[in-house]
Amino acid sequence: MPKKVLIMIRKSPYGTVYAAEAIRAIMGLASFEVDVEVLFIHDGVFVALKDQKPDAIEMKALGQVLPDLKEMDIEKFYVCGQSLKERNITVDQLTIDAQVCTPDNFEKVLSQFDHIIPF
Image 1: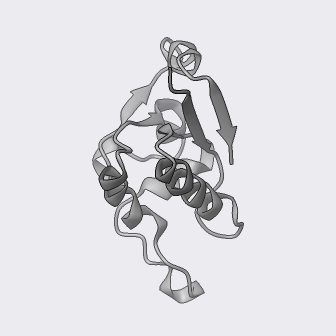
Image 2 (image 1 turned 180 degrees about the vertical axis):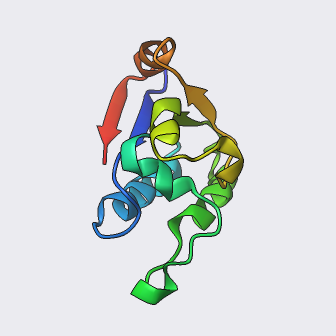
């Protein structure tokens, strides 16, 4: 039975390498046909925001890559509802369709994975 891996993106998209490395890890695992799903939590929710304009800091918008991950069979995304609320972000502002995790279902979502890799 194939292993299920959750990539947990916890850091903001700019200022550190964590979010960019998470995207690279997602694509790398997918290329080996690993069953990968993604969770955006804490400042990681900013990675999935639409209309990022990081040109001023000479970076590429990480969020625009996310919809393209479907071509690599990465189709399941989760976002922490509490993290969205704390940052005044709605699911309509995200580049991807994501299942919102609440305190009630968070543990259930995490329990379905064989491995969780935090970034």
